[in-house]
Length: 91
Image 1 (cartoon, rainbow, N blue to C red):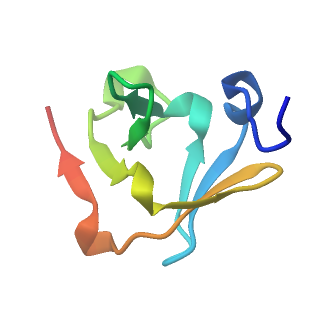
Image 2: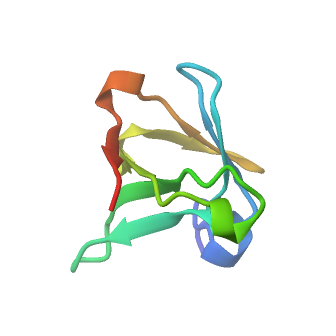
């Protein structure tokens, strides 16, 4: 196998960090990835649930286009996106 192949089971423990502002978006296993019909990753959905108690959690999400993912390192996923470019979703 090629060296640049990553398994999701390995990546789910990777922390997501925005190098533009230093914001940490928790770990991949607490967020979602949208994959299109051809198998390409299109969006990283960041869950903004800040409360530890389920009762108080809000359902706020942020969409980060996969094109903004700059690097997948040994234990981090680095994104580079301006705050104004992040699409916010409140269902």
